[in-house]
Length: 181
Image (tube, rainbow, N blue to C red; front, top):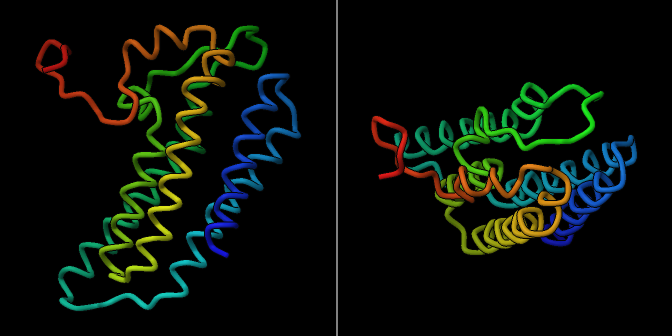
């Protein structure tokens, strides 16, 4: 059931992306909200099914702190970073933002979602939960691949140049002059 809810959530996010290709409308926003609620619900319900293993205590504290950090980063990247760096609505062409977390990687939400699920898997330490988390990570990866190859190049006029400057998922190491190492 968890994976079906997660799949439904990711499909709604994809439908929201497709809706944006046609126009900026409320339908896309509503689809996005439904999608993110579905993905969050899937993760929430999977966590509720499995009690965490709290030993040793220091490991539990570190893992919970990590999970909280990744939830905050995920929320920031998806709901704060984009609006802060998005050009005004009256601008005709949409451009990809390479500011904030979107200057680190093209899909920071995937990165934080991956780390969140890994943190929870370490906390819960259950094979079935790890399978659920892996399934959700795989669905998110498929979504970002579709976005990166099919949707965003059409949605953003400068996406090809953005792709050449910003790594896909794994952040690049940069030297003092800003060049990749």
